[in-house]
Length: 349
Image (tube, rainbow, N blue to C red):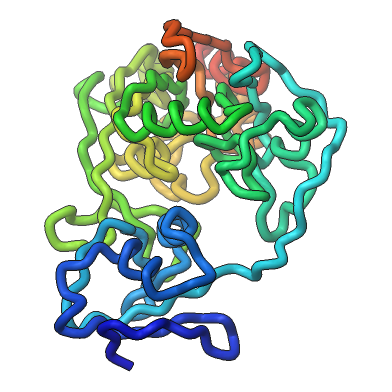
């Protein structure tokens, strides 16, 4: 159905299907939808679109600021309304900093940030509710109280969480303005050349796989979002071994985010041919060239590599202005033991 001024109604499955009419052309899609779907606010619609609930021609469309074009057909499929509210759970937290407005934690690898399908319990949010009680900000929604940003389940490192609405709004604005200092430590296959640079490559959901991001043409892909990663090789491993002919087995790389897109570092490093060690989603690239069994150092490194089943990525530094006081805050935490052991084994080559 072509829609101009009509109210949208869901079908039996709860999905909203529509085709933009001539009078709709030029309207921002999240605002346009908020004016036609009474049950959803604009902020909720924006979040749903960014999470991939909107499709166009069968593919996820994640740009809430997109200006409609006449004839474009979309389907919005919100998740079930009755998602269970997260409950407090006594999960240990590594609290780096806490005051009345916010809390900074050092998240271990393996801990999901917020509840979602398949992970309704045992998340960082469950731990925060237990730790903070009712003080968490509600802006993030029932399932994401206080959550301003997140890191992947199998990435370790620093996160800031808002404890009230004012802090939540201030931190959200800082993230949107790219005023947050985020430095990650990664161990990748091989070593990029040159040893430092900028990866400026737009990202969007990969066709046919909503859980994966892909580099796309920003000019032609409707859902493309600009993504910029600054990288620097801190240490290359394995170049001293004669059989490697000067090529590194792996490298310790610092990545500073200018933008903060889903899977940004993982997708960007894989795009330039250096996927993260242990990355089961983006790591189907080249193996560790030249690293073969035959001596104690190589066998030790290979043994650790076989057991390393997560992406080798750690959010090492987090810096920002306090959203209420304006004080400059900066936190740093070293990589956890599994990543430190991997680095040590590679360093011995």
